[in-house]
Image 1 (cartoon, rainbow over the protein chains, first blue to last red):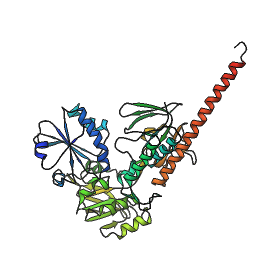
Image 2: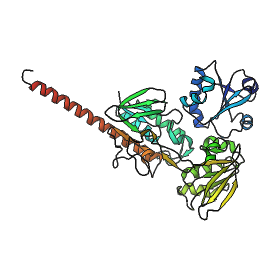
Image 3: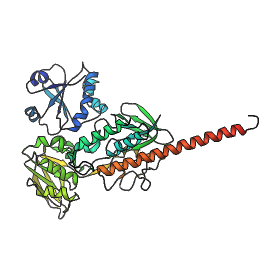
Image 4: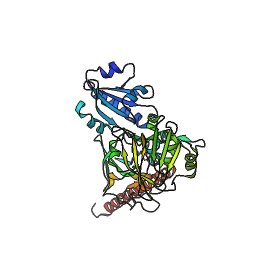
Length: 107
Length: 327
């Protein structure tokens, strides 16, 4: 299952008002490690559909949100719960390492 | 069981795969999960790889190498190696997913990893102004003042690239001369957004939630001074990535994997090494590719000898059985 994209216009409903935890992958086309981590996030989403929602946000198209969340390095993955950032993961990682970082949500 | 497993997917790994695949060895390439293509994936223009007169983007070059290897039947796995068993005639590769693959030979081409400054605040502020990837993160430093640490080609390339975004780029170098190639130096010297700070090293990175400045220490008189910046790109070199084979393969005093003369033979039979992981001095895409070729040819030769001696042993056994009285 492919991770769905979110944007500035859907941010409030998709992320801040969401019921369960939402992981947002801040990414860009020009970022090689972002492209490599994307299929891993697709897999994690497929295997944990009822535990976490994973969304991707293109920082090039949504610089306002990149600035608001002080993104200076991508890929940056932030888990939002009840509208607030609870966990931040910076840099591309393999599946096992990501699952470990997300254990609180998907274990 | 496979004939050859290649660990690594930079120019050395993929070139070894091209040669091994063309020799019908059906190589398996463990390409890693998030570093497929290796270091060139985070570079922009590659202007010194022969055959590309107009230059080529690093990621495009690596995609082409991978496609070339796949065209001849190399199989690529997007997974990381967890551990290796290299003793004996059957080599075992355990992956992060838990899968285990076996082969008669291994080509180890894991390249090198970015060297860190070794400062406590470096770790803490990574992702908060400290970056290891100019092509990924330059965008976030539009109209900011930033610094690049280092004096080699990578540092010059990053500094030059970052001037597309930043208003000012300091290049901080420990010495008073650069290791970088002349053309990369000249490009940086001519760029009016770049200012060099010589004979200085980073003593500390300042910043609470994000980088706000550096404490620089003179390598001449040990005096210190502060430099306000908002972003820090570290390009002070690389260390060979050998943690998977510590205590198993012999290393050189420089920390690279020791190989026999001009060959790729390591201290363990059937295990070959190529690319930056064996190279303390040149570390170019094209030298790594050449080194991958050497490893594939060495592995092919080793496999042929193994087969020959296996056939010889079988023929001897047949002869002995035929000659045995009463057989």
